[in-house]
Image (cartoon, rainbow, N blue to C red; front, side, top):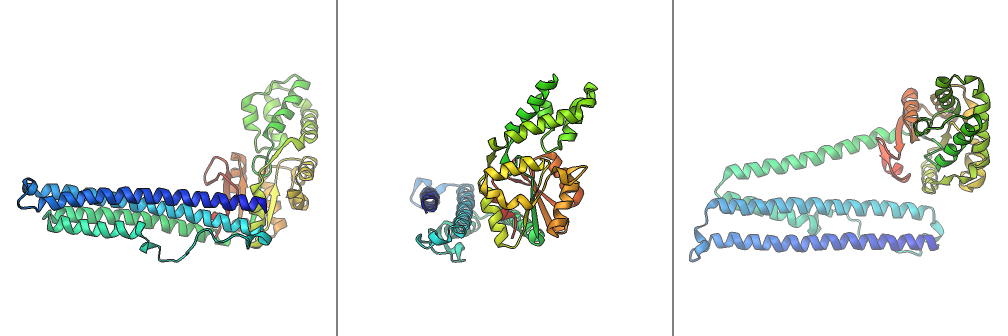
Length: 374
């Protein structure tokens, strides 16, 4: 209850901030537009010294009015987009706090589809039309009128193409029937645990563990990483013992991992949509079970995980097994990972890949995955 109340208050603060920014920008916008209109009016004053201003001044001032209107329109649209994301986030929070949700009012007010009639969007459109008429009548310039019409239609075309691509992307993802997650670096942050484990093995066998190696081993099996390290040193003979040393240390310290808690929200939301979620990892079973025992949120995945012992070769083999167990065609699935090897595994099985962290397409937070799906 307390958590939901804090989130409700946070939403209200963010909404207030967006409204204040929009109102401030609209105030300055209308003030500047008023000065421009006054300047245009002076060009028609027969008894004024400014009455002899050339038609080019009218065109210049009108063009400034149009440019400001376009900028303000875009800014207001972005503000509305930010509020729309907040609305989705608030509703997703309410889904998982259903007993408490009725105690809070709807913070977003009217959800009417006639958003174009709001002053923030309708006023710039009206003034753009006004300035186009001034250019044509007062500036006496059909050329500038056509130039601005072309510019405006060009901007509309860019927006339409972006909207169409977004719609096609959502349509493309509408057939998603299963999601598989990587574990290390995606659901939990265990980088320090694995780094320390490799270092412990290196210390025991007198092998230097470099930053280059630690970067290479991310997302790879222990076998792949150890061979990469030991083969150039002609120490493949200790491969098995070296790996066991690393695994033993990692298993002992598995509880030191950090859990990305927003994953809970996502897999529960996907479950409500009828989309199963599994885990495919290069970590061994004992490590996974120790992590799951520390984080109760993950206990449901004890029988929904493909760990290292379940496949022999590359991670793509484990990913195929995961989709088979889910009874999902890989073409209708998503793999969420954080490393190049995860991307390669997804490419090999033919599923969509989403990168958690840095990559493309990228999600910085797990909840962003929900916006990718329809």
